[in-house]
Image 1 (spheres, rainbow, N blue to C red):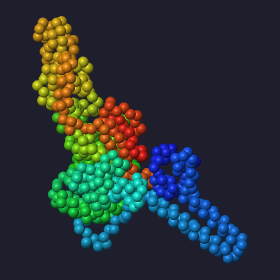
Image 2: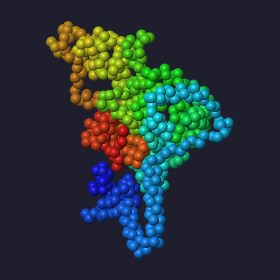
Image 3: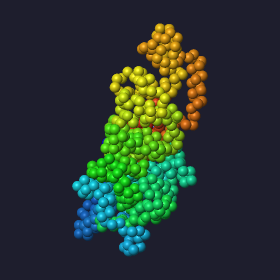
Image 4: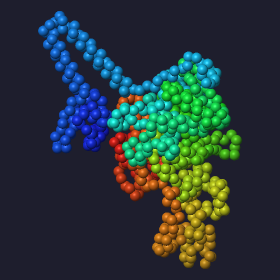
Length: 615
């Protein structure tokens, strides 16, 4: 505690009984401690005795002190000659110290290399984009100069699409995450997290890549340098093709220079040509201007007029003025290929949908490959639709108030949905047509329209009597009544006079011709033996292969390395989708609340050594 080690790190040390303490340097690396601490107190032998090990900085301090004492002694013996030697030694010590500090600084902060713009522009395989076009694109991206500060723009112009560097040793530093894109500044995470998600789609679920996968391990994805570069190329190609309005006219930037605003583009006519030009542009993508070049290529392939037609507010830039963060429109563009503003399912009309002047809130279309979740939903500040929550692949971009990360699992079955859940989602989607705010309430006078959309033979007047909430209908009530309508043979009412069982669509008792009155609609009573038989048949009817597993491992990847403290990190999680079966105390309320947006009864536990960083 006296060494200044934070409590969370002390807990990590306490849980890491397999750490070797004989090599102090190796111990520091395994514990992710720098040489700034002077003393480490570790238990080398499990006998209750604590070993006090000096750190390298402590040893260096002792050496400096001993050297200083020796110099002072020499000065006293020969003041004239040894004074020059002492000064020379001190200068050497200062130079060595300065070199060490510079080396530590380089370790703490990594910078992407500058792109070497060709001196002979005639050799560039592309055409120069007119400056007025570039000005228009950058205006749509950053807004007017007063919106996005120079410091915020500098962060975007310092970010490439590159990977975490290997240490080259046998120690797992937890920043040797070979599959992970490296982010060195806040801001571009809203672009990088979707690119990372599409890379994971290729790595995890395309067996032709041949990547080593280990579900449940601390490091589940182990690609080679060639494999991860291939995954990046595939991801970029896929994103560009999703965004392109014309697959025979795709724009890709092949050379870029920020201050002179020289941007060269190449027009390609298909996916094959696009792949070739992207592969030849890896130096540009890995440079400081890499992320900007990629985003501008996406915008031009989508076309600016189409983007402006898709957003709700044309005056808002794609990069927000608050700290240079990504707008939701830009995040949606990279994930879905459409630059829509909202995250709900489909389009919603603010008023009469048949009125041409009614404003339409554009949302997310169905059948998405990659999903999206946000920490704002548990706080009821946002509502993500099922099209985003239930993607084809179990990979989600996670948005918080200030950062974007990537949540994924290697188990493809996690993305499966049972038939019962599918029907429930489809029913809720139709209900939400008349519940624009998705508050679970719709006007009663829209019941007839809802039944028409559901292609039901039942008329509104036949079931309106079952809703006793006045001018509004609650979602829970409608779902219950709809279930009865689909199984009318199983639901009905007992006559209050003769107790005869009548089907729910009957308003008069078939036995004594007494009005239904206040008789409640209930399920037809059966024997316990018949109930057991029905339950068994129901289990056999639902294909177990279509159900998601109850227990699985998830991983949260955060690629931010703005400082050494904020190193890239992968967090391992154990998830029980049905909390009614596994009642455990969660160590992360925020992560559990997030995952419950997808799995409402989920229990989440940390299964690795590292806590999650969502912000």
